[in-house]
Length: 117
Image 1: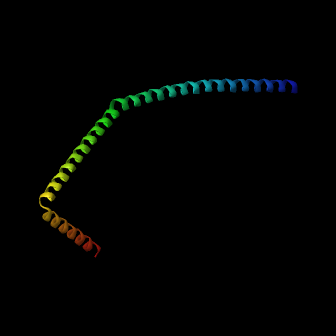
Image 2: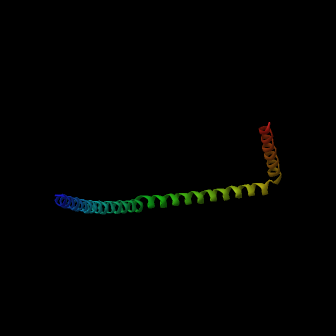
Image 3: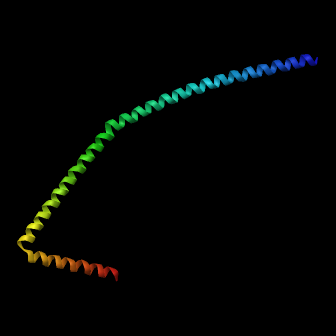
């Protein structure tokens, strides 16, 4: 009787182990399939992101860089023009230029002194 009970118990344990292994294989297959799906979806999203960068962001960045370069050129040209005008005025009227420099220095030092009080 004990032999039959142990044999039945052994058979039940084997069945439980086989069922657990089958569930494990089935779960592994499902996880592998889902992992492949996720990898495929991520690959698709990455290609969409690359396409977006190529079509939208790169041209916008290039355009912004071109605009900034143009503004820098205009600013440099304007600074050169102002410097030329100041140079011409100071050469034609040196006493006026010295007077303006002295007045500007006095004004700036007065403002700095009043700011400290």
